[in-house]
Length: 79
Image 1: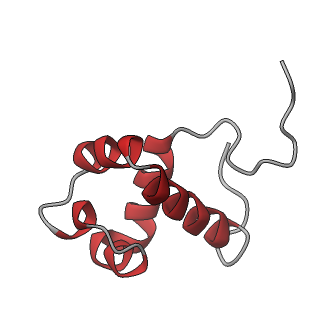
Image 2 (image 1 turned 90 degrees about the vertical axis):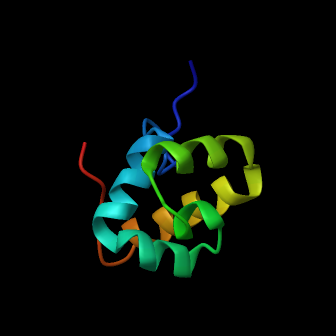
């Protein structure tokens, strides 16, 4: 198994990423930053995960937002 020391998402599930973003930003701010309907219309973790797992470009945007925030004011993610 190859170690991914330079990958800030290594070991994090998509559910963890979305849950932390919602806790920190809220659905409204998350929808403003990543313009997708699953964050705007009746949002839930489950529906968001379903959409993000089927839509690579949206998942990439959410992961990029998470990386941007953990390298900025949030600091390192909790292990």
